Image 1: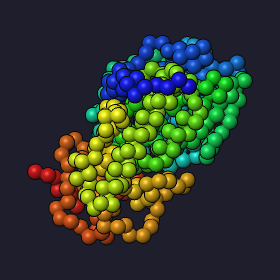
Image 2: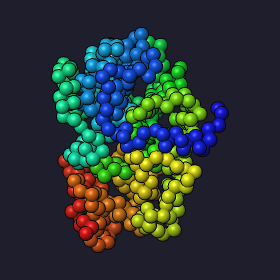
Image 3: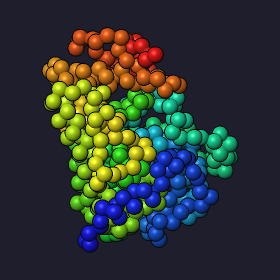
Image 4: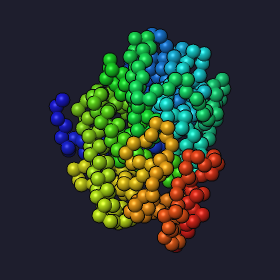
Length: 402
């Protein structure tokens, strides 16, 4: 590979659209990526791979988007559908699976997909309250989708995979070789779709919705925090594939092995820098609020911050996730119920839980007083019943900052 300069990476990131890509923009016809891959943009883009033996659908959007995606894809190639693949278990990927179900079609996902969907179900009310902050929805547009294809299911699906894999799964559809590789990013159930014959990788939002931007390592809607070191390992796994075309969930595909690798390296180095600096600060006895103020990215590690931000990543980077490890999400996706954390971890966890923003406001909540370790504001664990959102555990013990 010919080297790509730091200035070229900076220019790529600056020129690639940021938060504007979070808007739900739809097309009147499927967009041809090449002669066999077609895209239908939306909350997160859906893709269709066409083969002589049938089609493969990669991601299905939200439930109400399924009629639209189905309409656009059917106009290009009506099937049959052999496989439906989702690159992660978030609602904007799995919601339209029912709209593409047909006899003989198999829904394929990472084996952690069901647990990720259960996580979303626990905080679905909070997610719906916060979604309009980032993503606008036009009611007339939604109604038009259903009217155009009333035969396609438009309710939000909670699908059960027909076929699941742990680390890697190889498929052959009409001579098109498809490999699914597990990854960790926005969720622990990532599935990178790799087409080795063409050196094309479809990752959707696995590394975040905005490629070349700092990931959102924690969400205010109550979902699991994101694991830092597995995220970095996923970038390494993707770089090792050496894709020549990278297809993301939003924005145009990125073409060119050299620039793809250079931007992935920049993303890796930026997150790794914040992670290490945060851990160094924790070991030096600094509290999280101090770290958020002091830890920044040097100029040579410039990345966008249109969705996730460095200061949020600093606040999250050194802390365990739901009582678990920062380094390795267990395959069972259940939290580690281990020994008592150190005082530094306790302080950072208390700050995290009590910095959750209440739905409908932009105010933080902070503890009235420091709580003993046994009574700190712990996030809702997966074993707690559905319908009890994360913030209900937090805000009972916290008051708003005046």
